[in-house]
Image (cartoon, rainbow, N blue to C red; front, side, top):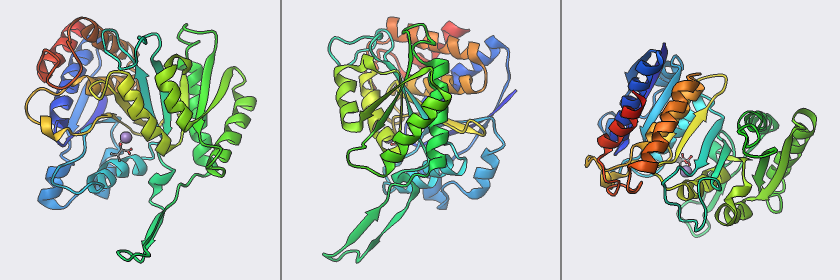
Length: 358
Ligand code: IPM
Ligand code: MN
């Protein structure tokens, strides 16, 4: 029995979450496990009605679940930052979900904007640190509104945060890297940083990376890329990458680029993981207000997020079946992954994926 908290959230979040739940139920029936689903209404509407974001009591309640499935957070009537900080970032930090795992995998039949590249070339994973960097809220403003205004927002990392993220990434590379998948003769972990300018933070990351790699993971090949060069190679030679580890801010940025080369926000999924606690899974795309309620948004990213949740819950067979069904659907059914151009409605796509699993 898995106890799952469902937070559909804002905009198209509820529509895509409903399809992920549909597929989850079919997978549970097929692979013989039970799920107990509890829905929470955190998001922009509740905030507008009650002023409440994610209260501390809700965080405590969420701790009692085995996993959380999130649709989208973001509302056109609410100023940017309020819901993101008050709900999404609060959950990530309060539940200490220190890894943001974001696979970049081009599924068969999916169009990539990178000319000449296919599923064999675009198949890597970004391990984004998810608690530190410029996301800690360290900073402030003085003389606000005057011509002398000063704003400071500090990127912060400590050795503990860096080490636990690196250890997760090395272990991930060992278990799921290209050698482990039979696709290469080595498993590779690349550190993405900016050691030429961020000479404190990425010096810390780089030293920790090589120390840990030498001592504990001599079997994992190590590479280093500056973040700007990483963007360049994502486009020019995505096949070079296997597992990439990086800080929170660079991870945020390069995974939007990653999402585009894997076919867009319709398919990109991620997991906010606390390997020792409660993890939260979400499509990377936002709440897409302009498509809300039309039944045209692509639910595959939410379904893929649910698939990652199944892996974390130990339902590996069900997870493999869901991935297989999504791949079949992209290869044989959908015309495009873009909202309104799939050739199917949101719920019809959910039906297609569910039908092949049942
Ligand atoms: C993401 C988003 C969030 C982030 C925002 C909404 C706070 O861009 O999940 O990548 O920056 O982490
Ligand atoms: Mn982002």
